[in-house]
Image 1 (cartoon, chains in turn orange, purple, cyan, red):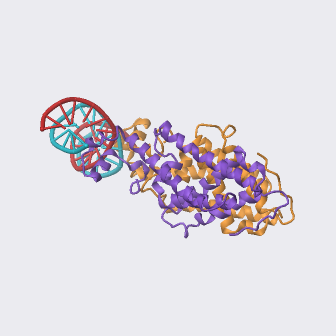
Image 2: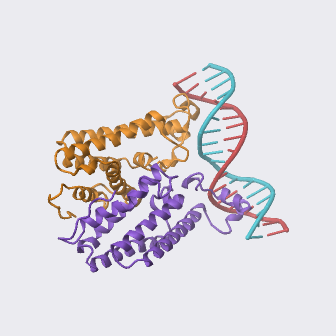
Length: 189
Length: 189
DNA sequence: GTCTATAGGATGATAGAC
DNA sequence: GTCTATCATCCTATAGAC
């Protein structure tokens, strides 16, 4: 996938690189879509693990949200093909299996929970954990990611013009949902 | 592309639907990539035309920025396959030709110019037309679009959970770059 | 500008021997 | 769990007649 794009995955080529024949692979995966599903699940688990490590290193609140978001973007930059599979769904006809998809929805719940904790800590207004606010945060991360993958996929996190906007983008959100009367941070970029 | 995904385009199938044979199409387009390039150029021109109509109906400033952004998202919702080709670049090995790409960069210049006009009108701080601020605005639109295309591609603009965030997302930006001492709008969503 | 014929591949998937 | 053989189908692209 990394060499030919997400759509470039084929049973034959995977088998070839495993040193076996195409038909042999069907003993392990019943179809090409099953390969995609396994990759989807693997990418999801790997990104979640990476994000959790970052979350555990920070106390609840906006700093933890910043750390988790940055870690997710860093993971995507390091795994662009998997990131496309997870966040763009570019394979026609492929939908992750119900079990795999269920794991994906945990992400949203985790994000909402972290937002609630930041609200409880007095760092954000209560609306910051509403449905639309949670979606807005995913929009910000998805936007940073999409612009990076589409325009500067080979750049590192540090040198990417869009990846460097991860924190400024989050600041838009945090400033907007800052508790009334609180400080309005100036743009950092 | 609409039926099989952007990667599903083939010379043979296009020819088939034109009622001619595959090889005949090579008299008009020298390769499959040339077909993609023509579609890229067509999609770009069509979206730009659509946005310009919206811009002309509003005086310079944040209202015009809102109108133009909303029009772009609406265009993408109505043309999901072309939007993916333009904003995701999912075809391995395909890069738009220099002429086509040049037209694409006009978009950024247009956006920056509209931001400058909003600054001149006193509706945004001067930093709102900096490089990073322009990129931030593209991140917001790209995020709305990506989340819609990946998660709710068949929904209309009005019923999409993410498309409805177009204006709230812009408000994050406008609030952040609001002139100092100006009003800080409450979230609309 | 269209056609036929063809080169020279690729693919997903199945059957059945070992 | 691996293999060979095979099916059925698709593709991009070129050559050359008309």
